[in-house]
Length: 97
Image (cartoon, rainbow, N blue to C red; front, side, top):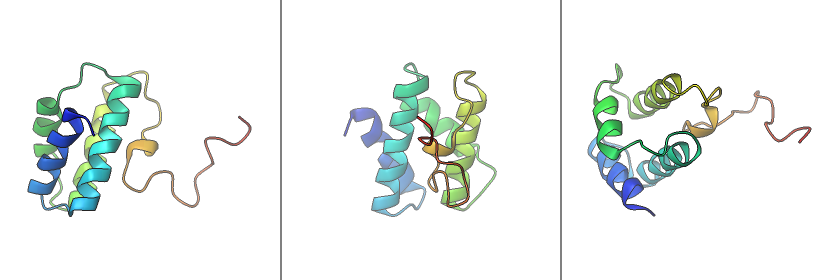
């Protein structure tokens, strides 16, 4: 796990996420960073996460991902980086590939 992801894991654990959820969320944000925003810092993520309008960790985290994606014109679908992923009713992004 990268330093970026380790720092975020600590941030998410401090926000009352269990260890497994914090690690998964940190890895997903690290993937978002790798795929869409190489300049994204853990400090920016922590600041934006603190601005989430939800107390529930999952909702706050998913808001964070949507907020990061909204600021990035290359990310047109943030579901891969959300905790629930694509969900059962969503189209498979690999279909037809």
